[in-house]
Every structure is written in structure tokens, then in C-alpha cells.
Amino acid sequence: MLLFPLFNRFEAIYPSKMTVAEYLAEQLCKIGVRYVFGIPGGPSIPYIEAFRSAGIEFILTSNEAAAGIMADVSARLTGIPGVCHATFGPGATNISTATGGALLDRSPVIVLTSEIDERMLHRTTQMNIDHQRLFSPLTKGTFRLTPHNAAGIIEDAIRLCTEEYPGPVHIGLPSDLANSPVGPDSAIGSAHEKEAIRNDTGKIISMLGNSASPLLAIGLTAARSGVEEKLASFLENKKIPVVLTPMAKGLIPESHQCYAGVLFHALSDYFDELLEKTDLIIGLGYDPVEYNYESWTRQLPLVHFNTVKTDLPESESVARYIGPPGEWFDILNKNLPASLLVNSSVLDSVRDEMASVFNGFTSHFGPVTALKVIMDELPGNAIITADVGSHLHLIGQYWKTSGRRNLIMTNGWSGMGFGLPAALAANLIHPDTTSVCVTGDGGFLMMAGEIITARRYNLPVITVVFADGELNLIRLKQSWQNIPPHGSVLYAGDLFESDTFLGIKVLTADNEEKMRQAIKIALSMNKPVIINARIDPEDYKWLVVRR
Ligand SMILES: Cc1ncc(C[n+]2csc(CCOP(=O)(O)OP(=O)(O)O)c2C)c(N)n1
Ligand SMILES: [Mg+2]
Image (cartoon, rainbow, N blue to C red; front, side, top):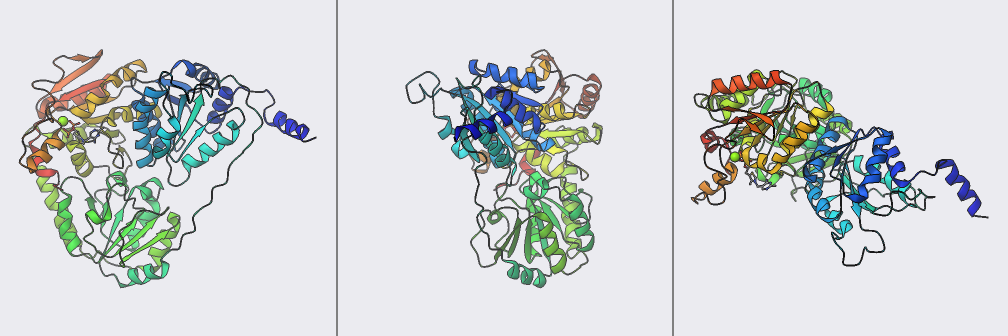
């Protein structure tokens, strides 16, 4: 008696008795997924075919880590979960790097890996490691699909990866699963209990009311939540100095009267002057994954607003409010006195001093000059992706976004090799917009194989390699400890020693004029191109903040 209604329900949901591969493709298609990034193994083939039939393109990369980064960045740019795929063992461990990135940079990514079938799962067999254990600390949830849980798991995975904080989920696909008919579900949409949160609203109201010179520190959660308009009108009424975390760059224009600069990045020790005159830090959508409060707030009283509970300093003078962004602004608007910009002269002097230090480096061909030329020549709507290293510390502070969210980076994860695949994804998602990757040579070498991905799909990305011959950030840290550069020198002489790399044009620049020419040529080519910027890294010694 029981079987009959179940059978009817199954027939109603799955009238054509789809295979698991077809069902997965259909569900991804329904939420707007257009690409799956990865490298196939044998068991991937039916999935790739099902994706193709559903209109989802499989983008082949040279390394699965690049595929994961491309999924992450496509999710950031579209708001739709990014999807990537890898095979057993080595494919899974390669893609795990980017999975960690999606976790700590808060990006909704669905990671699909092939898994060993049930029969051999606990046996000794080629490429077999436990993917569920591998992905457990790297994801918000990890699942193993069967014909009977497919519908529930896929629904759960999509919900879980997009809800606050967004992040990655992993779905293991047993190697014998793809062509099985998707069966009646045993568990659809498991419920997740939300932890009850007690907000310190009363304490916050009194802290805000008593503050004469607060400082607003805006972070990744705010940046992701699209608070630009609310923030602009809030700052119109309550003029408070603003510092941003690196990944919140672009939330307000650098020319805004309240803008001080970017925490953690180049010259950010100039904010000390401002902190001396501050009596309260207001963390707005501040995610400590980018930069712990303790590292810079000098134990000033702290009011923290975020969407989910975060790790905070244990102190009597810390109060937190967990809720949606609209509520943060309601509390701030109601309880902060309307003010003229207290500390405006300090703010002006901090900004002027920082600008004059940067300008001091424009007389030789170092990273500041190279970046200035890129800024001069690129169209205003260009998307810039950065890698990780000293060059990122410079870009994060010096780059002018003019209030556009067009600088893409990793700071929560900070994995080298991010920049190039990120630019490829940006170009795929916004083909009519110029995408430029600015990377160190160390980070470029980690992902150099992705140049062929640009060539394969004709993605006209401009890859600017800041070729200083070294892992500069590490060499700097060695010099701070009076240790010679062991293990941080990459090569002697020229990185490319050729005007092509994997069939892609390499334009070399070793002075400002050649750099300008190279950018102009690159912009006119409409093809992938590399600019080998042979910079003198001296600037970093004075710009990167010693911590
Ligand atoms: C995958 C990974 N390995 C190591 C590091 C540690 N690390 C941070 S910056 C850096 C040096 C980066 O060198 P390069 O890409 O040449 O950039 P530069 O500092 O020279 O601008 C290293 C090794 C890291 N962040 N990520
Ligand atoms: Mg370098």
C-alpha cells in the first residue's frame, strides 16, 4: 500500500526517469549555471555529456586548482554558484586548494568529484582516498550521491553554498552512479537548526551615543551584501572616516571625503595617526578572516556588525550585532549623532602623505610606475585581478577603483596562483570587458599552464607579470630578520627569454615608455597576451608594512 503513493510521487517528479547525470545537469541549469570548470577522469564522461546536452559548457583547465578558482570567481561575478569538477585522489587534492579558497573568501562553489564505487571504497585501490574526510574541513558540507538521495542532496547543496556565509560544498559522485536512474528520494531538504543569537543592542546604542570620533572599518561581508547605496547615504549624514579591508576595496570611491584607505596593505601604518584620534571602531560587515581586529585596533572599544557570528576579541569593550545589513544601518542611523567630519584634517594629512610617498617612486621603473601606467591606459570599466605577494599589497592601496567593484583578489585564503584563472573567469563572464591580471612571477609560474586555457577558448586576457625574479614578499620578510634570500630567488636574467609563451605573444617592458606601448598594443590585439614587466622591486621595501 505504501509503495503505490511513493511510486506516483516519483513518477510525478521524474516522469522521464532521468539518469543521475542528467538530473544533476538539469538542476544546475535551472539555477543558471552556464559553465562547469575542471579536468575529467573516465567516470566524468557521462556528466560532461549530460552538461553539454543541457547547454552547460565544460571548460577544460590545465590544473584543477585553476578550475576551482574559475568557479569561485564566476560565482562572485554572477551570484550564481560556480561549479567545478575533478576526478579521484590527485584530481580531488588539486581542486581542494581552490575549495579552501572558496571557503575563506566566502564564495558559493559546488565541487563535484568522482568517488570510488561502494564495492571498492574501503579497499586498497588506485587513486582511492577518502574524499568525504578530505573535503570536510574545506567545505560547508560534503555529500556522497546515490540514486536515492540525489534530489535532496543537490537541493541542500545549492541552498547551503549560497546562504550566509556563502562557501563551497562538495558532492562525491561514485564512479558507477552517472547512468543510474534517479530514484525516489529518502531525504529531501534536511532542516538545519539556526543557532539563537543574543545581540548586544543596548550596549551598542550606548557605545555609539558616547562616541565623539568613531572609525568605520568595512569588510568583506558588507562588500558582498551590496550595501553601496545604503553606505553612501549613511556617510552623507554621518561623516565618519572609513577604512576598508582589501576585499571591500571599491565600496566607496578613493576620492570620497571619508575615505582613509585599505587596512593591511601598503602604507597602512599611516592609519596610526587616525587611530590615535579614534575612540570607537565600528566594524561593518567586517569578516576577521581578512585581518583580525586585534592586529590593528589597539584594543579600542569595538562595535561589530555582521551577518553571522564571528570570532571576536574577548573583551568587555566589544559589542556585536548579528543580523541583515539593513538592520546595521538602522541602528547606526538612529544612534550615531549627525556629525561633521571629525578628524578631517588628520584624514587629509594621511591621504596626502600616502599619495606623496607613492609619487616618490614614479621616477624609475618599479611596481608603482608599472601600475600607474596600467591605470592610465586601461578603460575605466576594466576588471583587474591580482595575485598574492608584495604586488598585491601595492595594488590594494594604490589602485583607484573610483567606487567600482572591479578589483578581484583573494585575501581570506591568500593562495598564490589566483590571479590568472580569476582573469580568465572574469573574461568568460564579461566577454565585452577588458580583463587584466596583475601577478607576481612566482604566482604566474604556479598557473602558467593556464595560458593555454586562454588560448584554447580565445579569452583575450592581458596577463601582466611583475617579473622581479623573486618571491619578493618572502625576501622582504627575510631582510627584516637580517636573513639572506635563501629559497626566495626564482631565476636569474629574463623570465621568458622569448617573445612567445605557449603560443601567446609576450611583450617585454623595462621602462615606463615601453610599458605604456605594451599596454596599448595589448589592448588593440583582442587576443590573450602577456606583458613581461621587468620591474625593479625596490619600492616594496618602503611600501609593504612590516608586521
Ligand atoms: C600557494 C601559496 N604558497 C605560498 C604562499 C606564501 N607566499 C605569500 S607571498 C609569496 C611570494 C609571492 O611571490 P611573487 O608571486 O613573485 O610576488 P611578489 O611578492 O614578488 O610580488 C609567497 C611564497 C602563498 N601565499 N600561497
Ligand atoms: Mg616576484
